[in-house]
Image 1 (spheres, rainbow, N blue to C red):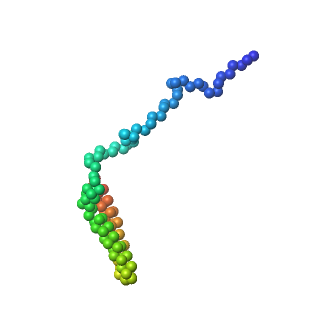
Image 2: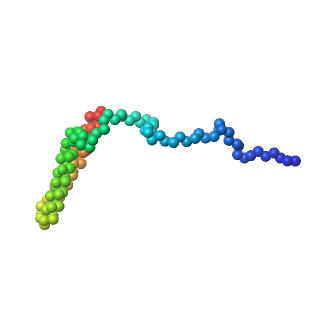
Image 3: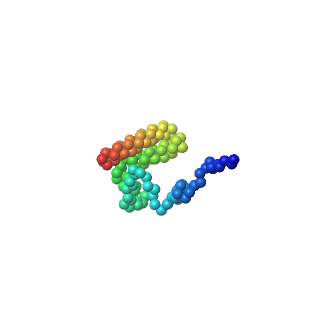
Length: 116
C-alpha cells in the first residue's frame, strides 16, 4: 500500500506571489503621511538670506561680531604679554557670547509668537 504524500510547502501561484518591490523614484519627493511641505517660493542666495535674517534679529550678528572682536584682541594682547588686558578681553568675550545666546533665544521666541 502506497501512501500519497502531499508536499509540505504549497506551490505558489502567480496570484499569491508577493508584490514586486518598486524602486524609489528620485525625481519626486517621498510621500510622508501627515507632512505637507510648503512650496518653495524662491531660492535665496546666501547674501539674501543673511540680510533677511539680520533684519529679523539684528542682535545676533552684533553679538557674533562682539565675540569675534574680543577674542581677536584678547589673543593679540596675550601674544604681546599684556596679561591684564587679555583677561579683561576674555571676560568681555564671555559676556558677548552670553549676549548672543540670549539674542538667539529671544529671536526664536519672538518668531514663534509672531507665527501664531
